[in-house]
Image (cartoon, rainbow, N blue to C red; front, side, top):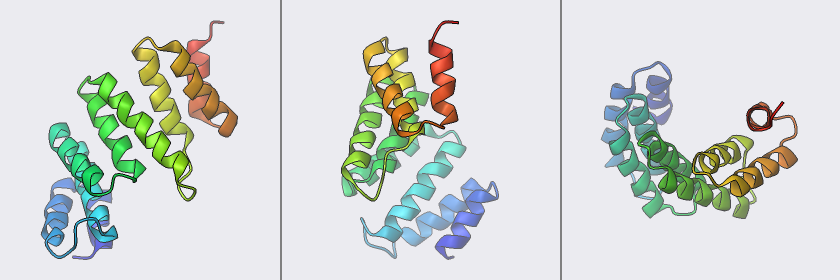
Length: 157
């Protein structure tokens, strides 16, 4: 099965089938290759769809170990940790994802990731950090709906 066909399984709401197909192709590729990375992301994303968060964390951790400069695995693992209520660890992963995106000219940071980090910092009571993330998001993405929603939520009146 091709990578496109595996993606289509995921898009059609067939995460179990996509995981089986992706895992079947892993043995044909080299750890750390672009193809391996794409397969691993499909597996992790499908595990999230199946609410197998602990297993998804293991997949994203494997991605991080093999490709530590990629930001998506850091962000996705942060999302999973947040789902488990591990907010400090989640924020650390979001921080790392933001730094990885900022250091890679081809991979600019996005407002949604900054807002996720702002929400976590806010939930942890670190208002200065929360507003720092949010102000960066507003500065870099002035038309962003996520940024405006957070700003409206946090500011009185």
